[in-house]
Image (cartoon, rainbow, N blue to C red; front, side):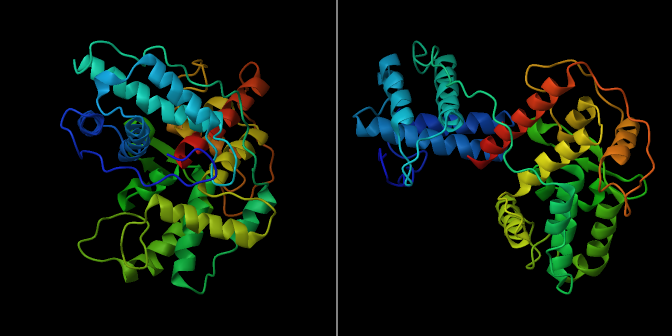
Amino acid sequence: MPRRGQIRPKPPKIGDGDPGGVIARIAEFIDWMRIKGYAECTLETRGKYLAWFAQWLEERGITRPQDVTKPTLDRYQRYLYHYRKADGDPLTFSSQGAQIIPVRAFFRWLARSNYILSNPASEMELPKTGKRLPRNILTVQEAEQVLSQPNLKDPLGIRDRAILETFYSIGVRRAELSNLKIYDLDRERGTIMIREGKGKKDRVLPIGERALAWIKKYLEEVRPSVVVEPDSKHLFLTFEGKDIMPDTLTELVKDYVNAADIGKKGSCHMFRHSMATLMLEGGADIRFIQQMLGHAKLDTTELYTQVSIRKLKEVFEKTHPGAYLKRKTKEEEIPEEEPNPEESKENLLSLLAAEEKEESN
């Protein structure tokens, strides 16, 4: 791997070479994670980082796991710290940590599988990242400007408006939106099922009337004309009738944010940040935001229990500016907020920023 001012080469193919070498063991490790039910995006990311690690080892004449020592890993961690990207910027501490985590997990697995006698990564520590708040959060006016960008005379413009409205309404991750099926939507109850979100957990969310209206328009006027049999039942499809992928969603949303000319850059996670922030500003209790986002806990806070969908829907309708086709002006009672609300809000936004960084790696 280059050290300064160059783009990293394509990592070697996992599984090539010596059956007992680092590359082959990485392939076994990835297969083990797949059997254990890890998400495909996790497998892809860990495989990429471990392939770069294997390449770094090979450049130093190390090809077998048992030859890796604690000083070797210390050198690798220093290498990541001093590494410079093509633009000359260093890796952030979050990025360094994201590349160290798979290495620690790999050697832990090697030791448990008796491929090595001891774990040289047992004392490998992650860099301190601190709290980083989201940089670009949309105001209500800015969100409306982005939402108004799709060309509604074009069928795919209707689809894109439905996608943007869904992101804004429920703040889901891009992979969660990509995986939505038609039958996950319950228009009568005004809810949507997120199946196997992060951590393979399901959750039911309220969805705003306006988002439902655009999804209904898309389902009736656009989807039937692009679907290809056998129908996968995915809610959002490409023009060719294929399932829409997370990377496609990233580019789609980014283009509309840029077209809105609001002076802010962002993509799918911008709507996730904005939904959480706008509901907080509207008076929502932090535990309801937690349920919407699908977080098991906020930072180290474990104060809240599961919230019923009925109560969650009530709070959503009272605090989300896009919950109705026309925004209600009548003041309504808001649930009492938990102790230390400002600290909890900062924890929430910091966690969202870290989540965005993890997804982009």
